[in-house]
Image (cartoon, rainbow, N blue to C red; front, side, top):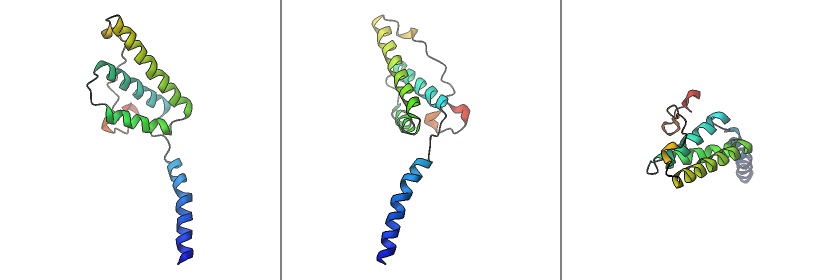
Length: 116
């Protein structure tokens, strides 16, 4: 009985990290960066928008993406925010170049590669 308990505990301790590692990124790097950009622009254009769930999903996905992709996403969000602040200072908020995000459907949980 004691041996079975120890063996089960060891198996669980070894299997959990492998299971977490096997659940790699759900998006390609390009899809992830596109979703991050679109969310950043939506956050600027409509600050009252309900983006908490999308941001949570993107933060979770960032942990699964390669470090370079996650770093690039953070840098792009900073650049978008910096441009928005500079544009707001110039009273040209509407002049922010926002890409078409019509296909970004991360919030709906769409799985298709064209979704983001």
